[in-house]
Each structure stands twice: as structure tokens, then as C-alpha cells.
Amino acid sequence: MIRLDGMEFKAFHGCLESERKEGNRFRVDLEYDYDISKAAETDDLAFAVDYSAVYDTIAAEMGKQSCLLENVAARIARAVRTGFPRITSGKVTVTKFNPPLDGFTESSSVSIDF
Image 1 (cartoon, rainbow, N blue to C red):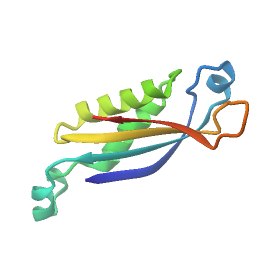
Image 2: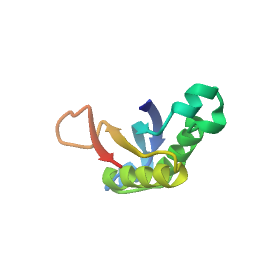
Image 3: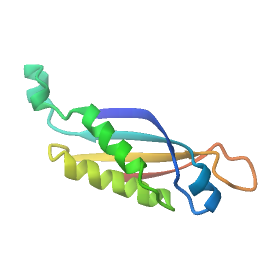
Image 4: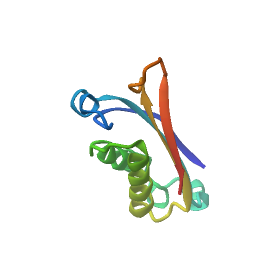
């Protein structure tokens, strides 16, 4: 299991016009599986899933506006799964800090297994 935890982005996701105009802080956590045996044996990036490339894929998806966190998480899951065929399964969680609710809520999040 490979984990990329706490990737933070300023993004413009939300249903309210103010969210889409001012933006908010988001966190993305990703874990994924692939057969690491060849990478572990050879110490060669050619046999691994380059997590800097995975990060770039996530950053690109975070840059596309969406109303719903569900849509953001699904797009990230799809892009990671499509872009990195060695990955056999994973889980992505997208967290929005300080969602616009009547009372204080630290964050809201959506997780999708893929």
C-alpha cells in the first residue's frame, strides 16, 4: 500500500458562488495498491508507480472546478486509475476545510474506493 497523505490545494469547488469565486483550502489523501515486488527488488523507478506523477494528476483534477466533492473525488479516482494501469485498487479522500454551514464545522469529506 502506497499513501500520499495531506496534499493541500487551494481550489474553487462548491455550490455557492462565493466558494467558486473565493476558493477554499482542500486536502486530498490517496492510498493505492500495486505489485511492488519488482520495484522493491530492483530499486528502479521504472518498475514503480511514480508518486510525483500521481501528485501531478491529482493537482490537475483539483484545478478543475466542481460543485460537489463527490465529483472531485470520482474524477481523481478515475484519472489515477486510468493514468497508472499498474494500480490495482485504491481509495481517495477529498476534504474541504471550513465548509459554509450555519455552525462551525472543521471539514467535510468524501471518500471513494476504486
